[in-house]
Amino acid sequence: MSVTTERAGLYAPTARQRRPPLVLLLALVLGGCVEQPLPQRPITREDCLRTVKLEDLPSALQQCDKVVAAFPKDPGPLNERFLLHTLAGNTAAACRDIARATTLAAAVPKGKLDPILLQDLEVRQRSCTEDEPAKAGG
Image (cartoon, rainbow, N blue to C red; front, side, top):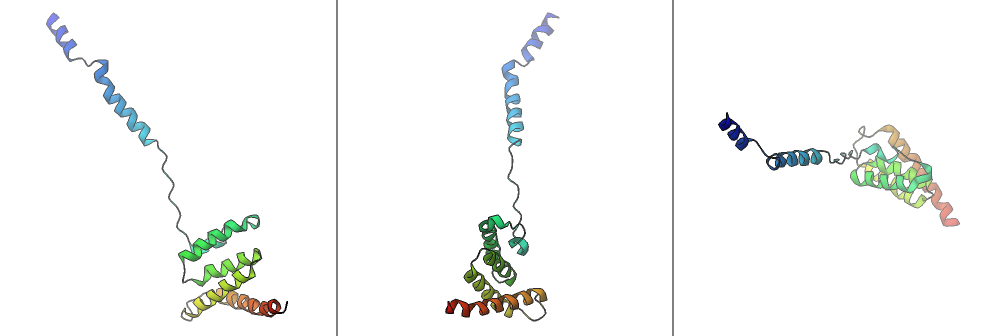
């Protein structure tokens, strides 16, 4: 029996031999707990007016600028940014957006553009042209 007891002592892992697997396991557990950033939702055409707060129009305009940049050939975001510029009191920028949106809309084949958008563009373009004589006169 003494032989068996001696050999058992030779093969029993010491505290030092057990430590590397524990350290490795601890590192894996802690490394797996690192918070990953959430994926960003892609910009959509509807994002200009999605979360508008009148007390924070500059942020809404910045968001809408991103939408306009993401959809440069779509008149819809320009139409929506017109509204934000108008609320901010910047009619010159609003009218530039509507002029550009009207030009883009004219390039879209008939029947492919939302009729409500077409009506918005007409009304807003007209409001810009009606405001021009008042600016020149006064």
